[in-house]
Length: 147
Image (cartoon, rainbow, N blue to C red; front, top):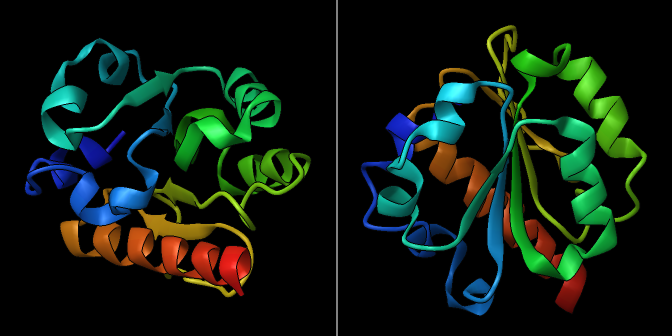
């Protein structure tokens, strides 16, 4: 996933996701074996990061225990593209409303920060795009949670 280059510029993901979510993990879903094998996640995020390489296994983990996750990020290019991943995540209740989701794909023409649904970023993700995506997703989630 392209996020590895982006997050390295931050001291930790805690700077982005905030202290209220410290006990939770960030779930990164990427078909790229290289992402799973690298150790950049622990250094870059400073929080628990779990990488899964199978989309439906990851979505099942979210569905079984949504409280374990603070953010879900999916590299769509390895799973049939943005449309396929969007359809898959739509099947998981609450995903995107109470649990922030960021999708990335090379084919994205314009980045999207909608009021509902997943944040969509163009891959490779820039540091600024990631920061904006995470801040927007969390702000929206807090508004839904705390009204």
